[in-house]
Amino acid sequence: MYDLIIIGSGPAGLSAAIYASRARLNTLVLEQNFISGGQIIDTYEIDNYPGIPGISGMDLADKMQQHAEKLGAVIENGLVTSLDLTGPVKKVITEEGSYEAKAVILASGAMHAHLGVPGEDTLGGHGVSYCATCDGAFYRKKDALVIGGGDVAVEDAIFLARGCNKVYVVHRRDELRAAKVLQESLLSLPNVEMVWDSVAKSINGDGKVESVTVTNVKDGSERTIPVSGVFIAVGIEPRSSYAGQNIAMDEKGYILADETGTTNVPGVFAAGDVRKKQLRQVVTAVADGANAVTSVEKYLLTLK
Ligand code: NAP
Image (cartoon, rainbow, N blue to C red; front, top):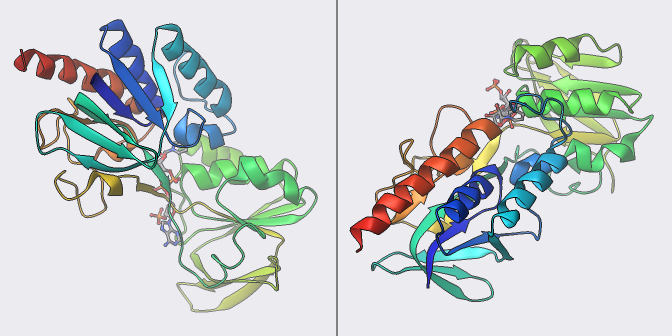
């Protein structure tokens, strides 16, 4: 039996693994897709993590994973499907088997949200994407369209504008949510056209994306924009469904836990984007991981 199982190998999970290794806890990290880093692996550039400006998400993920493993962390692949938290021994059930631990940190992060418009699912992988750094190269010298106004949408648009002929950004309001520094970069680009106050009505195409029809929310007018690629960046959803009914969550599925990571179930802690919190950034995720391990250490003392 492990002292601690950490579910997730994004910044929160890897930070927790570093702190747990230094605390000499017998720890297992479970990751889902044979790759550590969580959402940051899809981020072209991270410019707000102190001390390493402009690092790529993939490089930062590599560094965090190497750091954790150098200190002795064990990372295994396993898609967690459910938890059995009824007794003092916590059971973590994956598709392949089950593991037991005295404590668990839920650091399973979040994933991109879906828009729910016609064409989004049917043209998925045929021009509809949720990851500009993964798929942007397919649209080199072509026209692409980004939906959303947050950090991800604006970063995606800036990234795409480097290679695309033209990039449209469709946002439902007349003001972006993204950090001001990103807004300034985006709005200075000559091949970006903002489509304000507009929502996507449908993504159109026969076998591949050919255009997007947008509706202006102020005057109801419609416009069909011919593009080859559509990048949807309308926010994130927590990855918490495996945790079941016994862990308290808000209406969106974010786990209720304060900055100590303490949930409503003794011995179960939450860290990173899966936790209900004000700000979801790498810097807050790694802080969560450290805090959660401190809470685990205090909890383990109560078992003695
Ligand atoms: P976000 O900040 O929640 O932004 C989502 C955007 O999509 C908003 O502009 C929102 O519009 C729009 N939207 C939501 N639902 C929509 C719908 N149904 N139709 C049309 N538009 C819709 O999400 P995010 O950009 O994915 O970022 C996720 C988190 O990661 C955030 O906390 C973000 O700060 C963080 N992040 C940080 C960085 C960084 O610091 N460099 C980079 C990437 C991500 P409204 O504005 O009108 O609500």
